[in-house]
Image 1 (cartoon, rainbow, N blue to C red):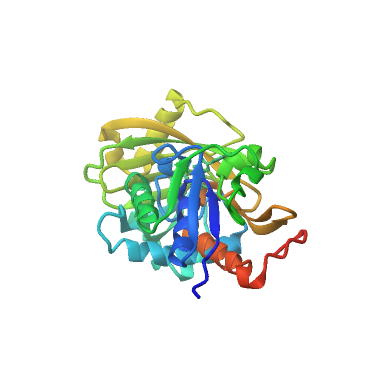
Image 2: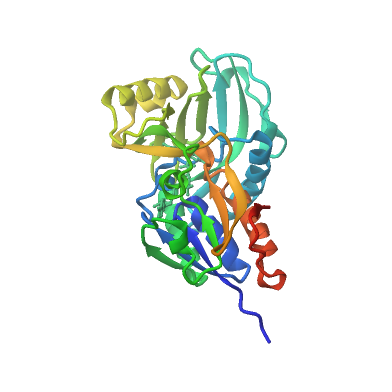
Length: 332
Ligand SMILES: Cc1cc2nc3c(=O)[nH]c(=O)nc-3n(C[C@H](O)[C@H](O)[C@H](O)COP(=O)(O)OP(=O)(O)OC[C@H]3O[C@@H](n4cnc5c(N)ncnc54)[C@H](O)[C@@H]3O)c2cc1C
């Protein structure tokens, strides 16, 4: 007799929740996604997004999750309708910088040539990276999830016990929402303000890091180009600030002079769900079931989404029915 796989509830319909849901559906699990906000109204929709580990920890795990995601994004870039392109780009620094841990696996990594180092920058490197137009990509993920039989419902969860109704395993992908949902005060916002402009002639992506670790970036996507940014720790404001927008335009013009002529489409703000380390672990709740936490991805939720989703699937397999849910307190 064919075994029926359990129903799994995924809380959250951002890039982290949808990637986890898809990975589970493709392994044959039944999945429902419950989320307060659905695309296009998630933080994930605000992300630029370029594959680039930023404001996220721990470094070595991130490099591992990032590597799996990099490979999958390069494969998705070959498909129509995903909103992904692999583009060349440079990252510039105000002072000498060593190679990042991920240099060994991204395509064509090399030190920047003198003519690639613009403005007052001192150092840099060139690499190729997937650029993910989140407007297109988030809609693609929703569609892929639904076509695999995933149910997506707009629904606020006020306690984990709600999510366990009719479900033995819950995947908590609530991002910044984990703060109120499970009282994790280690999750905090890092506010990001960006400007969406017409793409015009900009073809490559550019990222720069100042000595406070704040990145400025110019990310050309399928239909537009994103200019950023800011990294305001513990700032909850979702209102774009005019002086900040001007500073972003000035800094991005130093990186790419064509930006000075760019036509502005809109100003956007999102709150990155930051944490001292991504929380990706299983917790057994007596009399309820197993919750696998997958939140706190900071400025790299897109970058590490698939690697984290694969780890969620491995954890779910540990708690599959054949092994009987062992409902003793603990973590794996
Ligand atoms: C300006 C900006 C630029 C960025 N650029 C990049 C980039 O270039 N590359 C990159 O990798 N990352 C980038 N990021 C970071 C990226 O956006 C985040 O890391 C990512 O969106 C986190 O995804 P998530 O699914 O965890 O969170 P979210 O997208 O916030 O999704 C959380 C989900 O949980 C739901 N939820 C929360 N609480 C509850 C509840 N109680 N009940 C039900 N549902 C709940 C929400 O409604 C939502 O559906 C950027 C972010 C910003 C703001």
